[in-house]
Image (tube, rainbow, N blue to C red):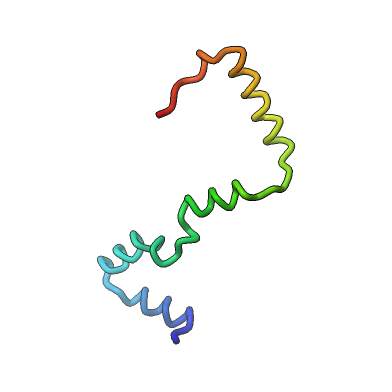
Length: 74
């Protein structure tokens, strides 16, 4: 099994086109870098975030008062 240093050296020795392919496919090697995985981790994090909760409550109140002021996303 190669060490991380050996892998790094092997990557550096690749031609630019091969390094570019690797860069674009890195999420296949490290799915934890995927945005979906990160969002799932954030969503499941149960730590309280009072400032965020307060901000979202204010936005929800504003939406109830003026729903037409919010553009549709889609």
